[in-house]
Image 1 (cartoon, rainbow, N blue to C red):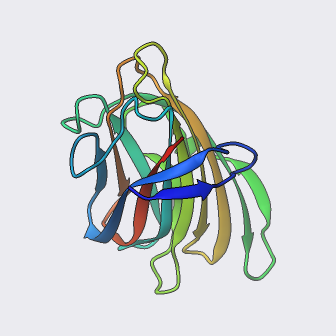
Image 2: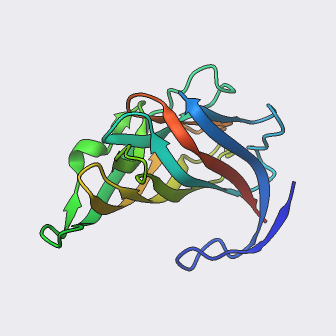
Length: 197
């Protein structure tokens, strides 16, 4: 595993990053990081993990990219999550800038995908990128907090920044994370998993 220099996101995660695994999408229905499978480490080795997604391109237009959690090594991705999401946006013609809380895209004890990249277009030049911090997933005392940020080139030619946070409501160790689109495949893009030293 490669060891990367210190990277700082908004004043946190100042430790050195260790690259654990890179998954590359190619018309993939899901990208899954399962502890102990294919050299993936997602356990008590690190107290914080960072997933970085680069140029996620959906196969279908106007789709959301998100994640689910598992406590049984990926047999079931059904951990209930309570989350919140808001986003800022600005279109290419400078007509509709704004900031919106999006109650329809957050979860209240929901087990489905929590969106991170929202309404991404599938034109050749459209994609989304971002990152997610997952804190102490191996804890058997506390719920599993996460913070995420995404930037999407929307189907309607908006630039959209999504700010997402919440927790997986389980005191069992989370040992697998799966990424997917709200519909269709992940046509292209990479997701990297880092451990924070």
